[in-house]
Length: 169
Image 1 (cartoon, rainbow, N blue to C red):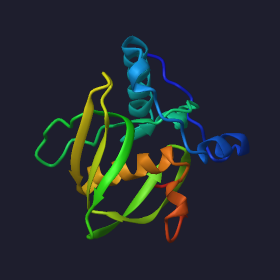
Image 2: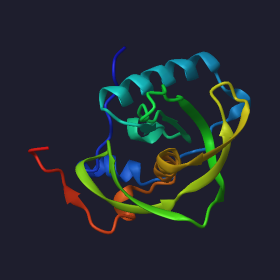
Image 3: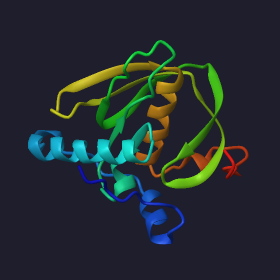
């Protein structure tokens, strides 16, 4: 499976695209085969880049869609793969958590970002079926990061202190 190029903020044109709010996907006219093919390509691209989430606009598509796949946890449980179209955060916990974030579109940079520890999102799956997901911890962070992308926001807009990756690590 071929991987797609990921837009980066180092290119001004690409950054300007990444900073625009994406268009809502027309669920009633969803082409399921095209959607499946796109999801496969996005998943291959995300995995190839060692990512845990990827938004459609990161590969140059103006559509409100992201995929996510958290890493295998301490128990060795295989993670669930998520496809969420037209996601919306419908509930956030008051509890906040600060954790380092990075981004495939912001290479080699990291920084601490404060996010809600628990969220509930609604949207549609790849077949156009309405879904609602409660997420907490790292998964909630991934979802919030990807939804930010779809709204034209990057983690560097939230991070208190951004640093470059140490080349030795």
